[in-house]
Length: 293
Image (cartoon, rainbow, N blue to C red; front, side, top):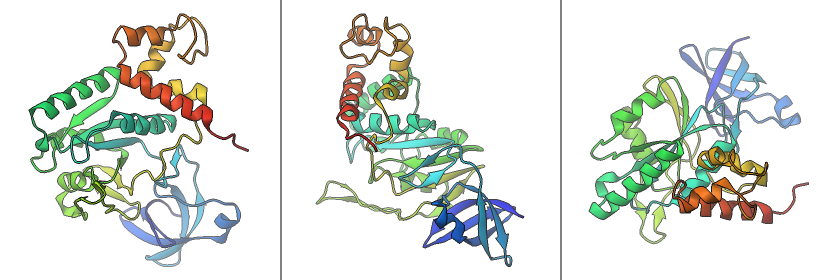
């Protein structure tokens, strides 16, 4: 039986890329019975009735999957945040980073619209970028209009499956158009009434950029930590995790425990205080969450 990768899902059809062709497939009833929903990124076995249509028979084991956006087997997440319009938010970025780290997906921070910043805004973005680099993240500063940083992004995409994610209006589609002008993905302006971006991407699709595949997604519709337990949060902040190895007590949550190396690092400016405040906020959110049954 032929095998391939789902590169698009739309209206109950799954578009499977195999060799040099794409076959439009439906899922067999067994998937609904077993509550298995094929996802973009899935490696599948399919049966083709002809060179254009077929049925998915088997979904191979996944190395990871995201629920919102629905995609599987992602290598890395390009977290796209704008410097301005909408304004850069470290709280929102850290929330995205936690969700990506928890799913064992490599995050890359991409700050767009650098051409729109004034001197003070540019200085502030550079400050935050340096902080996140010290925490262990790759950070790129870009502009789709002037193509600042676009060439630097290409090597990250080579041979990888990447998901572009971020709040609406930050320029994900414009960034992809700058990477590959042939895509001509629809873009839209910031809604002046709502003060945030209008959604322009309606479905998940893997598209070829260079020698990699990238997904322009509708964005995370949920940023809640439904699957994360309190002890897990430590591992989703790499700068905090590294320092936690020096804590006196194993399993330290870095809140009220004595001789906590993380709290000492915050006091010594080794870990940015805003990162630690976000950690505490997220931890309380997880503790306040209703129990799962």
